Image 1 (tube, helix red, strand yellow):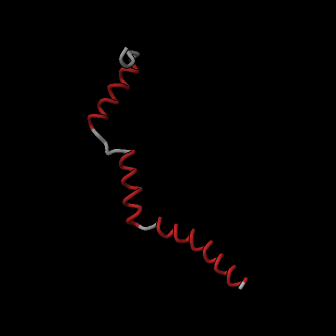
Image 2 (spheres, helix red, strand yellow):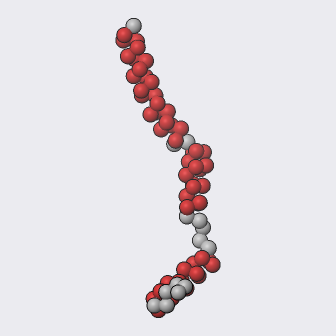
Image 3 (tube, helix red, strand yellow):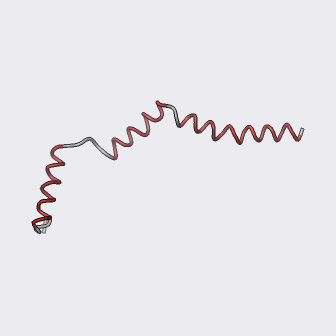
Amino acid sequence: MGVKLEILRMLIYLSFPVGVFWVSNQASYFQRHVVERKREIFPPDDPDRRRAMAELKQRLREGKGTRD
C-alpha cells in the first residue's frame, strides 16, 4: 500500500505543473489574455497623441514648461 500511495503522490505532484504549463501555452489562452492586455497597456499609435507629445517636448526644450 505504501508504494502505491507514493506513486499516486508523485503522479499528482508532477501532473499539476505539467497541466498548468499545458493550459497556459494554449494559443487561445495566449490570444485572449496576453495579447489583449498588451493592447490595453500599449494602445496603437495615435497621431493626435504623438503631436501633443511633440509640442510638450518642444515647450520643455524652450524652457516654458507646461502650465504655470
